[in-house]
Length: 490
Picture 1 (cartoon, rainbow, N blue to C red):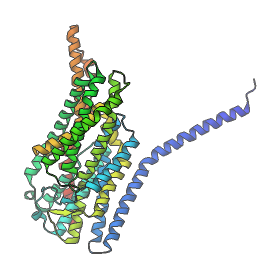
Picture 2 (tube, rainbow, N blue to C red):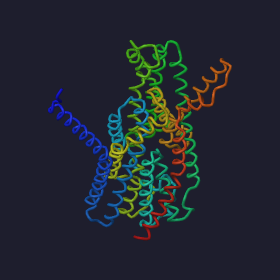
Picture 3 (tube, one colour):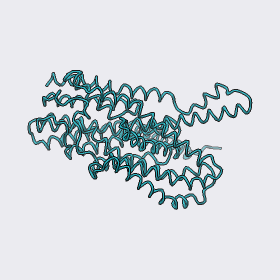
Picture 4 (cartoon, helix red, strand yellow):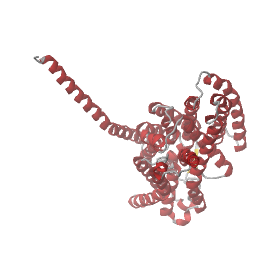
C-alpha cells in the first residue's frame, strides 16, 4: 500500500509542534527565576527612587536611598522565608492550592501590616544593645545599616538552601554584631541574648508538643471511635471554638495594639468569649456539613478544610502585624537618625516605611515563597487537613502560653516545630501499634520494617536545626564585618 504523503506531512508537523511546545515549556521554566529576580529588582529600585523623591535632596538623602533599597530587600526575603510557615501546612494538606495560598497570604499579610502593624519599634531591637553605647548618629546609622544588610543576606541564603529561619533572630544577630563592632562586648545585654538562645529549644518543643497533643486528642475522640460522624459533631465545634478563641486572644494581645489597647488578661477574656460563642455557632453548621458523610476517616478531613484555611489567613494577618517591624525597624531607625540626628530608644515608623515593609513582604511571598511553602507543607512529613489544623492551632496557642509565662519564642520555630511534632507523633504511634501486633504474633519487629516507618525526614531535622542554631552568630559576624567596612569607608 502506497503511503499517503499528506499523512506523513501531518505526522512530521505534529512532531515539530511537539518539539516547539516542549521548547516553550523549557524556556518558560528557565525564565521564571529571572522574571522573579527582575520584578524584585524593580521593586527595590522603585523604593529607592521613592525615598529620593521624598527626601528632595535634603542632607542624608543618599544614605536613606541606600537604606530604603536594603529595607525593601529585607522585606522581600521575609516574605520568601517567613510566610511559608503560615501557608505551608494548608498547601501540604491540599486544603489550598499554591496560587490560592499566595493570594490569601499576600492580602492578609499586607492588611495585618497596614491595619494593625506596630507604629513604634525599638531601634536597638528590644534592648539588645544599650542606646548610649552607640550615641553618635553616624555610628548608629552604620550599625543599623550593617544589621539590615546582614540579616537580609542571611535570610536570602537560608531561603536558597530551603531552611525556614527566624526573622527576629536574624535581626537580633545583626544588631548584636554591629553593636559589638561599634562599642565592644559590654554594649550587649547578654541576659537578653541568653533568653533568645533558650527560645531555640523552647519554641519548637512547645509547638511540637502542643500540636502532637491535639492530634492525639483528635485520634482518640474522633478518628479511632466507632461512630466517627457522631464524635465529629460533638468535638469539631469545640476544636474550632478553641482555634477562634486562641486567635482572638493572639490578635488582641499581639496584633491589634495599634487599633485597640487591651491588657493581656483582657485579651484572654476576649478569646474565651469568642471561643465559647464560636463553639455554639458551629454546632448546627458542622451537623449540616456532616450529613450524608460516610463513617470513615477520609470524610472527617472535609470538616477541617475550611477552618484550616481561615486559620492560615489569620496567621498571615498576625504575622504581618507583628513581623513587619523586622523588615522596617532598622530602616525606621536610620530614617530617625538621619532626619532628627538622634538614637532614641523608641521610634515612630513613618507610613512610607511601613508601605515598603508591607508590600515587600507580599512581593517576596509571591515571587519566591513557593519553595519554602512546599518544603514546610510536604517535604518534612505528610500532612492532611487534620494534621495541618493541629499545626495552625498549636502556633496560636503556643504564642499565648509563652506570652503568659514570659518565655521568648519564635513564630517560625513554633510552626516548623509543630510540623515535626505531628510527624514524630505519627511515627511513635505507628511503632507502638507495630510492636503490639508483633507481641500478639510472638515475633520481634524486623529492623528493615522499622526503618520503613520513619515518617519524618531526618535530613530536614538536621539541616533546619543547624540553620536555627547558627542564625544569630552568622548574622552577628556578617553584620560586624559590614559595619566595620561601612564605618571605615564613610
